[in-house]
Every structure is written in structure tokens, then in C-alpha cells.
Amino acid sequence: MMAGRAYRNIRGAKPSAMGAAASCLLTIPPFPGYRPIDQAGSNPAGVANEPNPIRVGASRVIAEMRRHRIGGTYWGALAEPKETGALLIIVRDEDRLSEMLAAVDASTDTVIYRPDDAANLLDPWSLFDQASAVWADGDDPLLLLARIAGLPVRPFGSGRFADLADEDDDSLYAVLSRELVDAVWHDPFSGEPCAIMDMLRHHAAWRALIDANRTITAAFGFGQWKQQTVDALLWNGRDAHVDFAPATSQRLAEVGEGETIALWKARVPAEFLAECERRSAPVHEVEDGFIRSVGLGANCVPPLSIIVDAVGVHYDPSRPSGLENLLVGGDFDPELLARAAELRRLVVESGISKYEVGGARIERPGGVRRHVLVTGQVEDDRSVLSGAAGVAGNLDLLRRARAAEPDAFIIYKPHPDVLSGHRKGHVTEADALRHADIIMADQPISALLDMVDAIHVMTSLAGFEALLRGKEVFTHGVPFYAGWGLTRDLGSVPERRNRRRSLDELVAATLLLYPRYLDPVTGLPCSPEILVKRLKSGVTHQSRVIVLLRRTQGSIRRIATRLGFAA
Image (tube, rainbow, N blue to C red; front, side):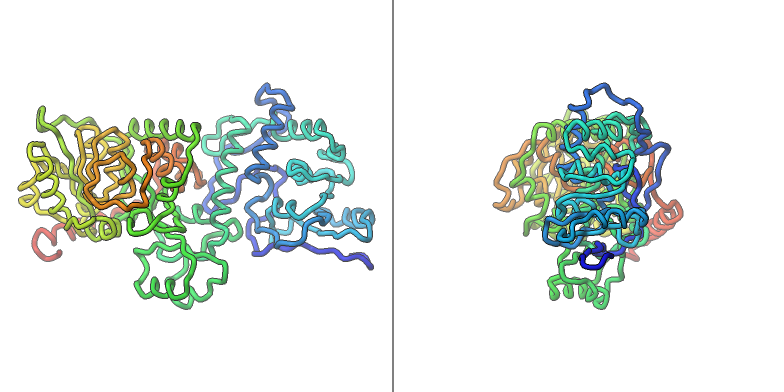
């Protein structure tokens, strides 16, 4: 520091264990559990990838990077807010610093940032928000990012980015084309060559996810077997891993003002929930996603999709949720709806359901009669307790379905978690067959849905999966997909649900905008399309030992139940 001048050294709001900034402007964020595949995300500069004119390609890239604030270590901590207008000096070589400082006018407010300081890694876009100009070594890629952000730059010395000293668009387009637009990129999920715009879409999704998690400082109620996949989906960008904390009052008291907790409510004690209410702790409630895994959560198969809702859980009709707000107030552009239609086709074609993939075609056992499926549920599940709307369990649902469909051929499918012996909701065979024509317990739900004409549910996700297949759906409870004009609603739907939605709008909100997905191959957050393709190809991510132990435990419970030793 030179006498007579005041310089501010920028420090991150939180320490980071992520390491120094990489030279590439589109480095894949170091999500917990990330397992790179060959050539993932690489961009050997100077190798033509597409024949677009430089100006057109570069302008599109600039617009997307500005819009989504991607490039550089955007997962780093946000710079503490300061008055705007400071000169930002980026230092990687301390020998260069003296030269830079000597060129600074004495009256200039100056901020010095050292991006290679692993303990203070920052989001460069938050620095650019407060800067009037950026100075750096001529080889520093942040010079290019600053120009993309619309700031004037001054390179010191020769280097790859020295031409950016000329503030005309031609110099910017030329450098951007060489470094990004015309480089060969490899998709991080497949390793195959891809266009720069595809990479930008991946980064935009990752940035949005990290920004949504920035205030999360602890997660409560997550079993260890679940943490391995949830970690990346809750990662705030600063710490090496999510803080999966014990659900104690002492740990809750350590959550600071403005910080948020992620909470799996069903797995924390009631007194802890009461303490959260008393402290008015900001909560993001977490639940399994709608395309979850191959295998049951009750068998400790970790989820590859979760929902994180800061408003209220989607299956509780007594209060709004993030999903309901999307459906009430959201606007869905044609591109998103086209994507939703294609995803719906992919899910149905793949035979994907929440816990299963595929299944052979099932012949209609009732001949020409109308075939109706009734799906059992876990009777003490929070979705049933919240949204059953007076239906008194699975046997009562069967009674109601038979009363509504006296001439139909009714098929009853018990819930797989109940069949596994881990959860409540068992209906004896004799009781079930008083109302159903047949019990089909082992067939995949997707194959059953393909075969039947209609389905009766309390709140089961199977009703949503039936809608994807164009089936008639009767809701006796109040699931999230009731009340939008797509189902026959027999429960009392909240007046808040006052819009009629198309099936593709429902799919766009429910499968594209609301959940988060994890690729079991790379460990990266991904799109639902990627996860569906992984599941279809047989890729899973689970501990076989834990699953085997849970299945054995469930078998013992089922035997005990049949012998009258357990409820």
C-alpha cells in the first residue's frame, strides 16, 4: 500500500475451500461429489466448432452471460455491498501490483481483489456491480469477463487479453470468438462435443441453483444415506459441503440472522419444529422429487431429485406452496411448453415413475370392461395426513372407488413402501377383494397406468403420472395436481387454485421449474431429461448393502404383520 492513498482489499463474506480461480471463464463449479468425465466442459481454444459469423455468435454469448451472470467463479461468496464507482484492480502476480498502483490517480477509490486467494474466493459479477473499471494483467481472463459485463478494462503487459484495451466492439468480439464462441466444448454429462450455447444453458441452471442456496447454512433431518446426493443440490457455493447438522436447539441457535435452514420435517423431532417456529427461523422445506430413483426411499435408496420450497410443502392444501404459486401466477412461454411436451413423451415412453422404470405390457384381466386402478398409499405419510380430505385410509378409498364405479373392473395396487414392510397402510387380501376385482402388487405402476382407463387416488403421485398418459383421474383427496381443470375432483380444492391449466403447463411447473435433479454419473445437478435418460439406461446411485439390510428388515416386519405381531 502506498502512502497517501486508501486501498480496499476485498474479502469474501465466507471462507471457501474451493481453490483458486481457473483460467477458463466457463469452469464447471466444484459441486460436492462432482466426478468429471473425459473432456467434460473442456474448450481447446482456436478450434472451430460452428460456422456462425463472429459478430452474431459473440453477441448471443454476451447477452446470455450478462443475463445469467455466468463466467468466472460465480459460485464464490458475494462481495460485501459498497458504494459503486471504485476502480477494481485484480492481482494474481504481486510483482505487477506496484506497476498498477503507480498508475492510479491519488483521488481514485480503489479496490484490490486477489482471485487466487482460496480463502477469499468471490463471485466476480458482484465485484463488477460496484466497479467503474477493471485493471488486470494482460493474461487475466477476468478482463474478458469484465468487458462482457460492460466495463472498461486496462490490461497491463502483453497477453491473451491485451487487445481488450481497445473499447470498440470488434476487439471484444474477436477475443470472445477466439476464447469461447469458436472453441470446441464437450458436454459435461456425455463428454460429446457441444455448442457454446449448450454450455451456457448448463451454467445458467447451476448459477440459479447456487443463488437459491446462498442463504442456506445448515440442513436438518437428513439421514446419512441421503446426504450423498442431496449435498450438491443444497450447496451454497462457499463451503466444501452442506452442513448436515444434528436437530438440536443449540445448533439451531447458531443460525444467524438472514440465514436459512433446509429441513426434512418428517425426520426431526416435534420439539425441534416447535423451536423453529418460536425462533421464526427461515425454513426451506425439502422433500423427494417426483422422479426420484430406481428403488424405495424406505429401503434407503438415496433420492436423485428433491424439492426445496421456501413457501410451503406442495402436498399440504391448507396453505400455498411454491408449486401452487407457479401454477396460479406463472407464465409459460412456448419454448418451455414445447420442452414440457417432449419431457412428457420421454417419461411415458421410458416407463418412468417415482421409484421405477419400465415394465412389460400388461394384458387387461377384465376383458372389455372399464378398467380402474386404485392406488394404496402410506397412511401416515404427511401427504395423506395433510390432503386426504376425509378419506379414512386405503380401505375407505377402495370403498369409495367401488361406489363411484359399480360396473368397473377395479385393480388395487398397494403402495410399495407398505409392501416392503416399512410403512403403515396394509389392507388384508380379503378386505381388499370385497371392493376390488384383483390385487396387482408386483407390476410396475407405469405398466398398470398404460393398461387402465382411469385411476382413483387420495393424493398419490400416480394420479399425476396417469395424467401424463392421458388417463381419467379421480381425486378423492386434494393432491397438488387437483383443481386445475385436469382431474375429476371429489375433495374440497382450495379457492386459491383459480386457474385452468393445460397438461403441458402442469408438467412445466411440476417437472421442469419446481424440482432439482442430480446426475448419478457425474454428481452434477442436471435437467430432468438427463436424469430420465440415466434411469432408463439402468444407472443408479445407491448402497447395495444398506438396501439389502432394509429389504431384509421389511420382510421380517411383513411376516410379523401377517402373524398378528405388528400393526
